Length: 234
Image (cartoon, rainbow, N blue to C red; front, side, top):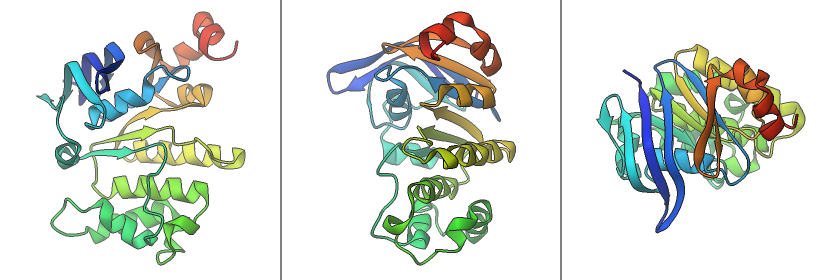
């Protein structure tokens, strides 16, 4: 049984339909990437899973339970971590306060997980009392990922984690995602840097116009002439 399986999903925003019959499968421990052109509906898949986009049809099964249409405040209790593309930290709160808010649905803040986050992101460990808004873009992205990891999620959804980062920080961000997956957390990622994302993931999906176009191992998609010509710049 898949950890997360999206079947024939229709979703959008209010009456606007963005996704039409989308299928996505993520097995336990996998690293899966969704790529495609701007406006393909990639981020809408993520938002539909966590209850932000409007579910219009199909199913979203997580550990065998259909969570389609569930409210975001209910989804977070299912140990699904989600890092939006932007506005993903509280800039006027400190690093420490942001991490504590990441665990707000738990009975108490797990100090061992906080130590794990600081170990994984040393730049945050040096700035626990600094406001998140004073951090660099890369550090804020690491903090957002750290907040999601405070739940010890079974699956981590990452929406464009390299967006807006300086080129020298992009590889570091991908390395962090690799490490999180290697440590046992399942990853589903939407990414604009399609070539690098497919190079690193186990499997990939290519979306276009709100529908599935291709699905295969990451390396196979990179080597597919049609995929390269249509979506990867040749």
